Image (cartoon, rainbow, N blue to C red):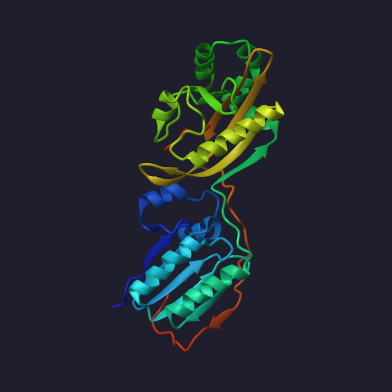
Length: 315
């Protein structure tokens, strides 16, 4: 009876995931890739996949995206399981397969390939601007544009929030600089975000924008708002972010956001509204699928087979 192939995944923080775990697909699923889930995560998000088959295993990774934390976890896994044969399959523009006779050889070779690749880290937060003419594709965004002159006359934040809530279905954030300071403060947020942390949107009024469960994400959001306020012009952009959540761990959110700044002698504030869209994929890297080179490392003779929403609002 043939042994069953067992697959695990290790993310760029060195944390384990089961390929069969529903939360994995829900958290990181691709939208437009022809790859399977594991191959997509390896190729585009810097995961490492280990396919175990009896006393053999295959380690799939992309050298230019693999982190030191991932390598450390791979090292511990290989040593704890004592595989007799370890195949290294690299995914990327230089795709090839190597067979290693020992864990020491495999780990050393992984390090060599990473060093030779010109390693680059995957960004957790990616934004891509869109042409402002695409605003009309979204009824809520178009409504904000049509009523912008009316909205800018609302000095009272509570009244402004009520009006914007009706226009956006509750999917909005209003932020303004704190008096005498540089931080952006949440002035209002809608209840239309179907996220894992609606409490933040409902209760964080008066707090800095960056004070979220994932403070790195909060700082990134705040810096985007600050950029729009500084430039003084509306921006529409797609966002692809991997955010750390208290309850579910890391979670990927994809959305289009529309940011409208306002400034006069009396007030300065910014309105942001967003719409979730899992078709957005700013990480998809269409690299060539060349077979590449197959090498033998060590003296092993292969036998058997080795198989080749969110805890924050989305401002």
